[in-house]
Length: 371
Ligand SMILES: [Zn+2]
Ligand SMILES: [Zn+2]
Image (cartoon, rainbow, N blue to C red; front, side, top):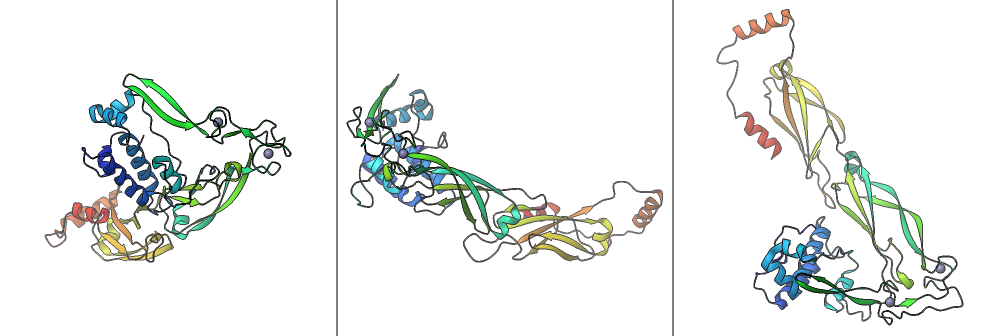
């Protein structure tokens, strides 16, 4: 549980003594901002879940009292487990929490299909350029034979006896702290409110069949590791002709040994020998666009940072690019021949107070590289 140690009142931005109405209002406001239907922020889905879980606890007098007295540990001991929200639409969430309909569409209609998660792994250079990536998924599709109601053509499903067609039943669980009542999908009809007496031969009454589906996912230049791309309506088909769920494709960006990414900036290092650093040199440095020749002045110091403006990552969904910062490392000989030793000793003997210059500390330079 992501919220395990976060203060629930803080998550909802309310005072500890907040009234139920204030808590409800705060959640509505946050949900409208954070729901993935609305927000493009990469961390919005995670934050939305946290906020929804906080609301779930604080909107119920029993769990709120538990939390106030014993904190998160109390909730766990009390047998409370947060609902793992698949987002559904914002409207679904609101009707689930408030029994109302955000968009005023009246009835919610048939069940929306579930969301499907997938993950793709791309190289840093691909994140730099953007690409289209094919992703294969197992997705439930509406059965062609029965049109999704699961009944063999010529027969019709009957109303479920367990929930009398409502699709939901109340479940009571007991703990040392008392009883928890929650409403869940009806186990007999899985929430559809109907039962199939003569199952469709094609889908065995499921109304949907799993199929492998290939999707071409557009990955925009500048995408960050862990960001998700939402493909609306491409998820599981809804039950009984309901709308399809969404597909969330998580993009993992592989590490590139040559580069360290820092937001939209790229950090890399370049090795100069003591002689190159002392006498100046032109050295090849890798960038995301390919190799670049960089000239270093005589007397280049270790820890110096060369900023290559606009050579960083594209800024996602905006114009502009980050920078590349190249950190200079000066290589000191590891092993020297007798002849080299003699030359270095001779060099040392010829050095005076002008040979070396005190400048800003190495640490300061490193700090500016890492920013
Ligand atoms: Zn069927
Ligand atoms: Zn039922």
